[in-house]
Length: 218
Image: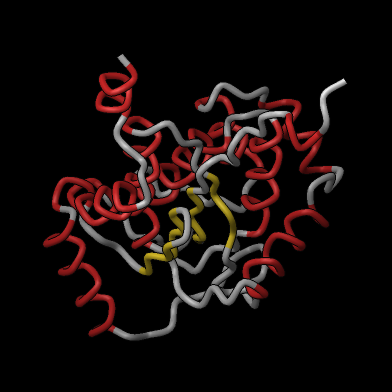
């Protein structure tokens, strides 16, 4: 029998993590970066919750009255992501995102976390739906190829509540303070950036796009 030291060990997968909250508009437009990385590189991005407003009750709460900040955010979105900004519908209240965090854990266990989180963002920011409602999350589940009834049972039974709370605590323990925050291998990227920044970070750590890596292997 070969010694363990003589047995080839496979390298750990390259980490691509997005710390985010569904209610953050910058995370909504930043989700596209995760989708692009999944298409272009041999990586499986992971979405992790960073709870921005844990004080928000399940039924939601009024937004703080700050007209200038809202106007500045809208202008920034139009400049940085005009196509997405043109489709966005700003919610009429602060929504509670924790139930969606639980649902994301359900989707993660079934290998559909990325399409599910994208569907939740669309439900909130494009369709103007309340992501604290069971029906909204079940619709997102169906779009992501998940069993909506199974998710509904898991949410009613609060199967993933403790795990979602642990994920939120882990985000805080990791020092995450802003959304979105991305971890690409050994590098943290805070906030929204053009995709070229992500490509540069990936390639500096030896991660080539799928087309280049397959050409090199050939």
